[in-house]
Image (cartoon, helix red, strand yellow):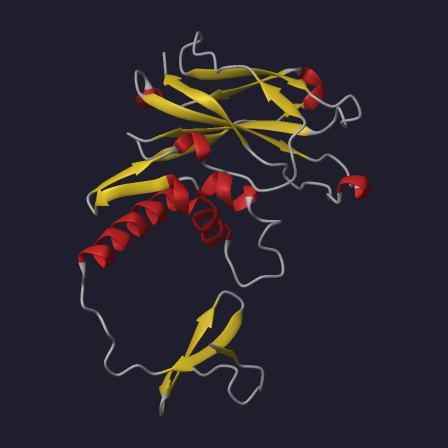
Length: 220
């Protein structure tokens, strides 16, 4: 795949001779035209397509968390946050049949970064339509103004909620969820975001630390 830089070709789209021009993210690219694509549709290919369909759908459903959690990781690259999410989490999707794919949520990353300062308790579902998680900082030098959010995903509703942020010094954070989630299972992650630039950690203001899977439970 080549990148088009000449202005005379900069707006070209579609097939020109043996070259296909298209827009990819912020760049114009070209690739060789394949008149007879090889597609034997083997069992392995069908399984791979089944996994990719589940990964793509999940990336779309969790976009409110992923678009922020992977933004710094794709800066300066040709990847989108969803592309990087899929690349990082491919091993979390397993199965032997394309229509029966299992997702390992506990191993999934919803934000990519350096080691988080947080140690989380198991989620509490005591309050109706609310998920609450307590946390402590595992590093006394951590910035107490860092922001902590919960990412809550409901597989049955195929939707995601990101909580309002709480300060690292607050010790707890909670997320309100839609009423239609009552009684449904959810998966919960905690994500810490930097409040300031921290050159000693090679991290910038607003950048996430690595997400941590907190647990699962049913909404009360």
